Length: 180
Image 1: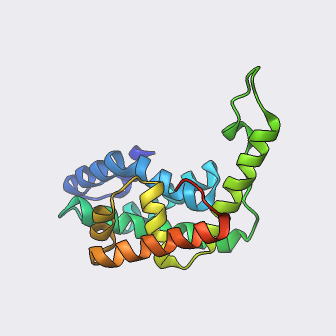
Image 2: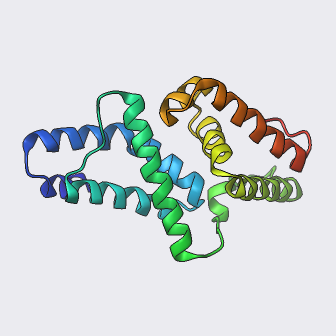
């Protein structure tokens, strides 16, 4: 795919810059997209649409700092995933093979209960206001610290702390004492 994208760019400098962004952030973007879309193929489609649009338009992500680049790409992924969800307007489906590694010690009842809780939790986070949802996704999915999230979202650290605490409190209120 990278070769296709590079063929759309005019200058060698843009090609080098695009290659760096692609190689450095592809997996991270896929992880974020998957969290929103809960479907591996949809996540790949969303991320590749973003890269295609960047290459086609020549408008590449900023590279002044890693935080600025991540912030730009995070917003791109979030917006693309949101458009895809609205456009397709369908329920989230998850392949059983993605979650189950069947073995002789497989406990169906425990696994079904865990998966049900996981699906309810994901749905609940998706329905949360964006200010809480973005912080929780970056914290739990991308494993960023609250300071890193403040930098990525360009929001004061204390605000991120408050949003995280309130988002977690909403989850605990809805689901009880989960270990989050």
